[in-house]
Each structure stands twice: as structure tokens, then as C-alpha cells.
Length: 300
Image 1 (cartoon, rainbow, N blue to C red):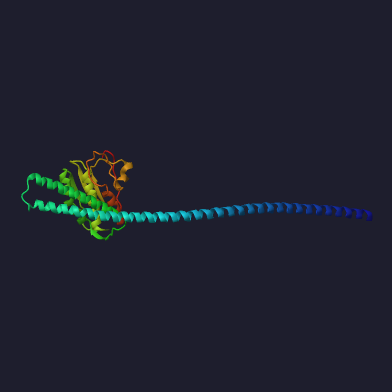
Image 2: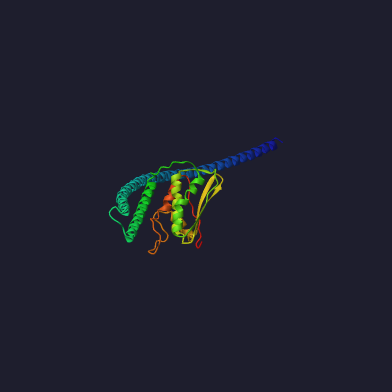
């Protein structure tokens, strides 16, 4: 019996030692696996660190390039602004220099028409009328160019007040009637009801409307129609100038607001002007917090 008991203990110890060896081997394998994983993660971190360094270097270069580009853009902007102001000053001086002799021409025409130097024949009066029309036409062109350069140079000041819309729109009749009668155009003005006030610069709004109506009268064929009416949308008032001018293709509609643009540029065009009226009107509208849009269809 003692011998058998001792042998059993030896077997138990052997089994226990075997299990301990297996457990140690398993722990060692787990530690090796963890070590391998940590080494792999360390390599990944090192790679990411290197990539971060490269990215930081690229960002630094990009920032330098961006700062250089911004500096060049500022210089270009300053140069363009200086050139724009020089252009505005030049045009202002030239406009003044051109207006002086043109006004003198108008004064001499007045003196001749008063017959202070003797009576005039009908043909002479006709010639003087043509001279006066040409003088007015040149003065209008100079005024348009000067107004546009002032808008570009942001030298136009706006006096925004509350204005009764009915009086302002109704006051256009005297301006448009003569233009409409000259081409047998029918003009209708549906003035808004009383009590509607708009916050605007009345002189600038009047100039916009005269530009729009003059443009409509210029391009509306003989026997056509021009109509002015207003609508309200919430707290906004829309002033519409509707005419029977031949329609404008969709892809050309925004071009009419560009300076010095007239869609009928051919040598056979029958309309005069610089093509600045709508550009000036859009600039004045923007300066007052308003906008101008066009709606047209070819053939209508």
C-alpha cells in the first residue's frame, strides 16, 4: 500500500508539472503574440508619425504659397484699384473738358435762333435743330460714361428716404409721352394706389425708371406698346416695365446689363447709345438694396 500511494503521488506531481509547463508555454506564447502586436503597432505609429511630418511639411509649403498668392493678389488688387481710380479721374476730367465746348455750342445755337445776327431761313433753322440734337446726344453719352465711372469708383452717394410710390411713378408720364408719340407707341401707366411708401433714393429711382422707359421706347417698334405697373410681394414692391420689344434669347438676357453692350451691334443697327443705361440702372439699384431682372421670350 505505501508503495502504491507513493507512486500515485508521483503521477499527480508529474501531471501537475506538465500542466504548469503547458500554462507557462501558453503564457509565453501569449506574451510573444502581444509583443509582436505591440511591435507592429509601434511600426504603424512610426509610419503615421513620418506621414504626419511629411504632411506638416507639405502644409507649411502650401501656407507659404498661399501667403505669396494672397500677397500677389493684394498687389494686383491695389494696382487694379489704382488704375480704376485713374481711369475714373481721367474720364471725369475729359467729360468736363468735352462738356464745356458742347455747352458753348448750345449757347451759340440759342443766340442764332434768337436772330440777334439777322433773320434765319427755314433751312438754317433746320440745320440748327440738327446741331442741337447732336449736341444733346453727345452730352447724354458723356453723362452716361461719367455716371458709370462714378458707380465703378463707388463715388455715388444715396439719400434713402420714404417716398410715396404713386407720385413717383405718375411723374414719369411727362418724360415718356414725348418719346412714345415720336414713334406712335401706346404708353399706359397703372399708378399704384395711395398709401404705398418705399424706402429709396427718389432721384436715383427716377433715373432708373427713365433709363428703362427710354430703353423700351428706343427698341419698341412703331405702333408698339409700353406699360408700367406695380405689384407687391409681402413687404416688397415690384415696378414692372412691359413692352413689345422683340424677345431676347435666354442666353443673352444677362448680357444686356453689361456695360457697353448692345445686342444689335451690326452696322445696320438703327438705335443709338453707349449701351450703359441698363448697367447704370443695375448699379444704382444695387446701391439702394434693390435689383433689376429681365423676363423675355424670343418672338414675343
